[in-house]
Figure 1 (cartoon, one colour):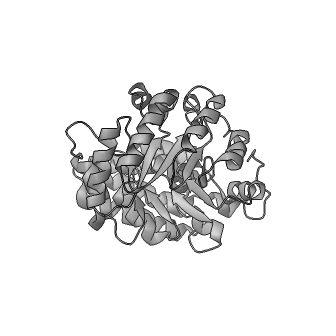
Figure 2 (cartoon, rainbow, N blue to C red):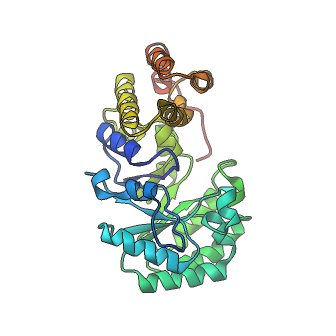
Amino acid sequence: MRYYFAPMEGVTGYIYRNAHHDFFPGIDKYFAPFISPSNNGAFHPKELRDVMPENNPDQVLIPQILANRADYFIQAANDLKKLGYEEINLNLGCPSGTVVAKKKGAGFLEDTEALDAFLDEIFQKTTQKISIKTRIGKNSPEEFEKLLQIYNQYPLEELIIHPRIQKDFYKNQPNLSVFSQALKTSRNPVCYNGDLFTKGDYDRFCGRYADVDCVMMGRGLIGNPGLVCQIKGEKGAAKEHLQAFHQRLYQDYKAILSPEKIVLCKMKEVWSYMADSFTNSEKIRKKIRKVQTPGDYQVLVSRIFREESLVWEQDEGKPEIDRKI
């Protein structure tokens, strides 16, 4: 099995990826938050910093491009190739309203004729491997049959499928019947993405899809950074290890961000997911949201790691709640 870390805008930048890679090895590919090229052809400084090779040592990083114009995609791909990147990921999955309104991300899925023309041009004019991360439609799962016919015309490095429509955002259950059909009919390698939050989720998925050899996780890995380590039965589930990871992340953000109020905002965003590692997750989120100073933040975090229990520590030996995967 290969394990991919999905991109999450505002969270999984190079500071987070480097800390995660050092503390929780085992990720085969990290995907960078999307680059959105424009007509001036230049990357935003923040986008460029995030993908600079010197900021991403010892890890396999795949840049992601969000675009609906082939010329913008091609220019960005060429610039990334100069940095040494031989694989690019096309974002056809972002469900954000602002993105969809521009007919990008999952919003591009609605115009299949334009999407087909876009793919035809970028495959003719780029030399890198291209993978696609896609949802199964904008408004209806029935859209995916046509989308898959289009994808099958092109030699994708892989097709990463999040089996929800754009309007689902992250609600409702992943549509596994559509995913199952895609496994049968895709001419390209398929990777699964969606709602793998625990080792139990992963084990149930593998029990149903024994032939799938690649999964991508995002929210589940930010919530539990050691999830892949747990899946593999390796080090990473101990509270002390998670605390050390947090401290590394906090100090690395402090080294590049100022004032410290911005650092607190970054850490609060991380905790909005990582609180799920603890049994009192909602209580922890509320306390983290209310903290105002770096000193109070450090005191609170020390108390959390000292007094609160990790979910998997409490659940050892207990049957896990059944889910639909």
